[in-house]
Length: 107
Image (tube, rainbow, N blue to C red; front, side, top):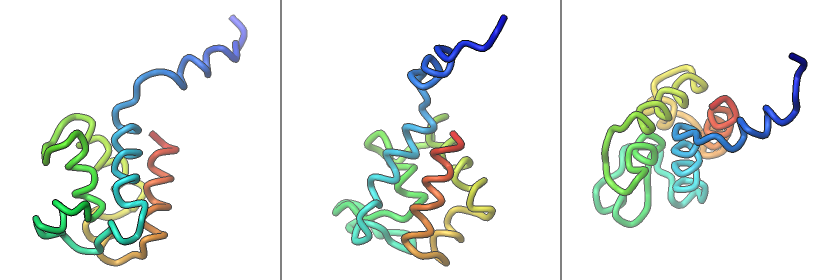
């Protein structure tokens, strides 16, 4: 059978919990004032400030590890080329967002 462009449109609408989690986490830290280049304290998290890792783990409302959050964490780690916390603590906000963008595109 020959290629049918409709196949791509079907894939675009397929649920992708890992991509959705990465998008949600990126939105949490999109504004630089909401991003921390270290692990947040509980009061900071309660006020909407997150590091990259906590932005992922808190998707869905609570701090939990689900298949989607685990997949998103490891997808981000793959494009960062090092552990997420280490990359977060040693790179700029723009570099963090760029890493999320690469992970989203690859998901």
